[in-house]
Image (cartoon, rainbow, N blue to C red; front, side, top):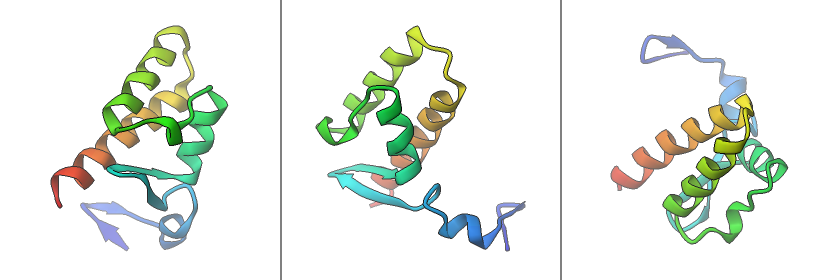
Length: 87
């Protein structure tokens, strides 16, 4: 399957790494993203909104060079931006 000129593997779309669900009002995360956040001491279920979650991620990234968390941060920001503006 090709989406936006990128070849997408349908199995990836069904993978837990890419399946986003609304865990709090306006906060959409995949199980993989939750796992990375928890590993870095961030519990997204305790965040009241997406801005609070992004703030906590930024705080951890200031003290850490965790490339995986940096990638997850960008994914969360982009996915939640589009999810929250396209309602």
